[in-house]
Image 1: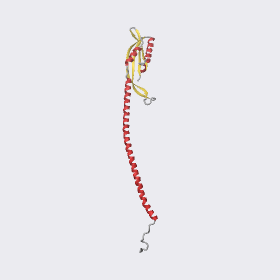
Image 2 (image 1 turned 30 degrees about the horizontal axis):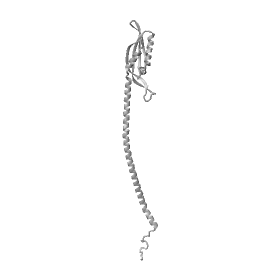
Image 3 (image 1 turned 180 degrees about the vertical axis):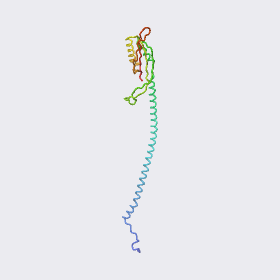
Image 4 (image 1 turned 60 degrees about the vertical axis):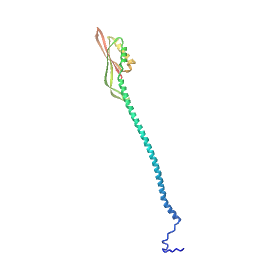
Length: 213
């Protein structure tokens, strides 16, 4: 078979060589490989994102449960604090009220035979005192408190014997298991001579029993 080349070799395509075929194939393969890699990376990231979203949903549900539990716990703490405040107020109120029956019985039993009880009165009034701060006991703060005083008036015959009997009476009250622990102080506030009754000299004494707050 004869080939006639009218173009003198210029229009005849060059025969493909193995090297050229390999280069062309490699050139076409690179985009395909990149596309496959990107597709694999996309699918992998999509799967990872889906898993992370599921984990986030689970954490949100757990967080909601914990938030509810935390809110309930905070509510219980507030209720506990309110109850403790009420109990503290009740305890303070109770401490201000004194059972006088056993105190009066002890007082009458403690009076020496040589003395006569002439008056008994309970006085209450507000006073300002320095007391330790609740959260800092070393710091003293001015606080208004209700002070309770048992005013006792007794009398006896003129002479040294009555003074000794009054001192003995104070010691008995101070050491009494019924009255003593409740007292902040016990003091003789007045002594009055020359009150004549039925031809006898009588001495009058006034004693203050100041109770603790």
